[in-house]
Length: 181
Image (cartoon, rainbow, N blue to C red; front, side):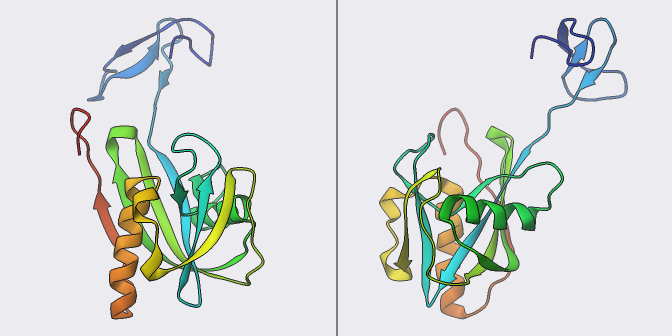
């Protein structure tokens, strides 16, 4: 950040009085510009023991398989964001179920939240951000072609929980240090 969105003057990084973190602060109007984590919301859409995956048509990870998910918008809940992203990326309507995974990814300032969901029909397709969509039997997930660690971890947990027919909420962290897991 270089300029204040309030007055247009330059900003500098400093720890404001009463705070404990560096923030961008306007040198003129002293507006503190907070930057907070972004929420990614998505679903684990299932139908008849198969999970719906989308092949990404955008970077990062173009061409890799993912669960339908994306950034939450203002004025929507995480549940609404997950359902919207599923419709946008997979042209699929779902019956939303319980929150399933919350995975903190602090090195990129994100929190990924996935809900379990049941596809309402086999009427789905590729939205603008997907090259294709496909139902995968749980024993045929393309593990080597998954897009992100949060997607992999959510699917690993889902397979384990599906075998036990018990789906608790999982809260985990994925941390990287110096470019390594």
